[in-house]
Amino acid sequence: MAAGRSETDDRAARPTLARKIASPFRGRRYPPLVIVVPSIAAATLVSVPLVYVFVRAIARGWGVYTRALSSYDGAGLLLRTLLLVFGVAILSIAISVPMAWLVTRTDLPGRRLWALLGAVPLVFPSYIAAFTLVAVLGPRGYLQEAVARFGVEVLPELAYGYSGALLALALFSYPYLYLLLIASFRESDASLEEASRMLGYGAWPTFFRVVLPQARPALYGGTLLIILYTLSDFGAVSIVRYNTYTLAIYNAYRALFDRSIAASLATVLILLTVIFIVIEVALLRRVRPGPARPRPSLRTVRLGRWKAPSLVFLAILSILTVGIPIGTILHWGWRAIAYDRGAGDVVQPALNSVGSAGIAAIAAVLLAIAPAVWSSRYRGKIGVAMEKLAAAGFALPGIVIALALVVFSLSFIPWMYQTLTLLIAAYVIRFLPEAIAAARAAITAIPRELEEVARMLGRGTLGTIFTVTIPLMRRGILAGASLVFLTAMKELPATLILRPIGFETLATRIWTTASEGFYSETAAPALVLVLASALPVYWFVIRPVLSDGVERAGSRR
Image (cartoon, rainbow, N blue to C red):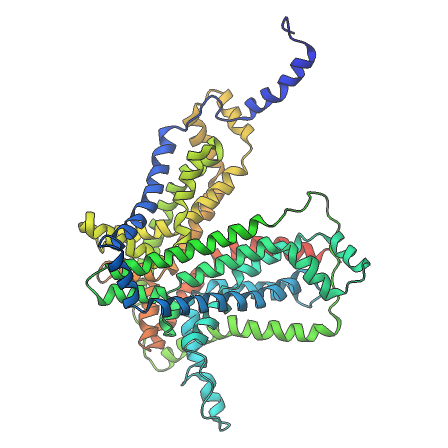
């Protein structure tokens, strides 16, 4: 022991020494340039075009800005958009809460199959969902043809307008909330439920007073995802002809030479998005986390006489969200073959989709690694700010990002307008948050001691990052690349606005043929896109939740 130091002082110094040893990059307050430069590039790529949209919208004064909004019936547009957002959110909650509870907490027969069927709608892009519903529920749809044989000439109009947009978006976006609720119901505190029953409360009061309040974080987060999805949707509302901000921005962009009106409408959509995010953050702050303690097993609820109605509810929902889209696509494909109508050229759009989405996925993961390493290993406000800025694209609709890039490129880099490079840049901005989230989850799971061992063996900071950290992140990087690839394949509004002339993807082929009523030509690209989406969605999104939540719940009988 050193002179002048007591044994107590030595013991007190051990935790500090242990923390220093556990820190992989001790001695460095700032990350190396190989981390800083890509992080700043990612944050700049996302933020600069979007800031320029605001600058362009108000460049000619507030008077011109307000007239631009009023020229497109700003109040009516806002009302229609909010009605759709709240309607989709309410209907999604009404579907997700009972479904998630049935497949995790009850003795429902075939629970795992129903759980999987409930998540399958995530595979279908909104525009495929919309045109399949139109084909079945439309004025000359399959349902009308079927009931006409029994003398029913006219059915209620459900496929177009508000009802069509509501059904297309709610029935195919509710899995965002449903999957989060499965995980939340799985983690419910059974002791609170037992206490509620001991106090004399029945099953329903216990559910609404104890179970559902514990699921508030999932409820708020999932509902926010659905709201952002509805705000950003363009494909469904354009096919069912319900005018919202995204459709108005697209029409203003196509119909007018002056892009200021489209930019003005885009700023309102951005502000709406920010407002809903702020509301969700405020609600989450009011939720107190439960105590961290071992939780007793959850009791499986016996459905009894409610078993048959529950099965009917899930069966009807599965027919609407899985049976109708798959059956309609296959029927169109069969008619195209039977009547020799041809499926159109699907090879080149498929190659274009795979190529552009693949390049975007590679670029996104390369840009995502640096901010993830900075924020998780060096911490500090600057690193966190870089990560948040780079991930800001998640909260922005694809059509706003596309318009931002159009306005910005025509002003500063006109040679890049309508090039594949600009289209891929839009994909990267829009889906970079998915790559960052996957990279950050991967690096957080890596024990810092492994990096420290590399440093003790003589590796420098860069050597540690490239030979230890990044190789150990490869699964997370692959998952992020797969998610970016999948979502870029399905992206519609940005592709419609930014694609080079003559460049067609599966998404644009589906939207074009469905909008013109050439359903037989829609079948092949829709089937290819759904099949390409199915495996990544199942493997990276559905499987981790269902394999953990439903199976664990099933073991607690």
